Image (tube, rainbow, N blue to C red; front, side, top):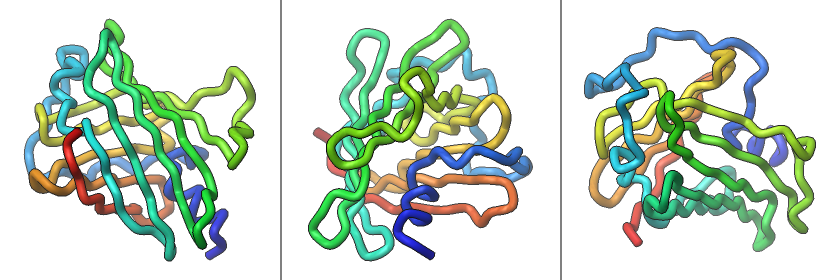
Length: 172
């Protein structure tokens, strides 16, 4: 698989086909996402570092500020940045929504100016797990705290094997 193909898998934006449902998590998440608050997602806050395809993946999440959290992601391979993501989780009346955009080095955007990938929170276990899913059910992103020092991110897409990324987590 090419680096570009691996990057696309990692970037959480592969959303073209409907997601197959029926996968469960160890803890029973709460389905009423409208009741979720950003404070339920503070387990994400901090620095997360892992490896992918011979490179380094870094993701930083801020603490809750106002009605949002912000995240930054970068993929480094061969000592050079391959791509960036800018992410937000915003509190809406329907519950938290994860939004993201991708950039090449030089902050050259992948998506059109107004295009943003949106993933409303569909279930959660406070300060342990958050499941975000595109409205078209094309992809699902799950963040799970597997210990106080590790964070797991899973990207699920129809017809594709789930991609699981393990991060060393350091609260900031």
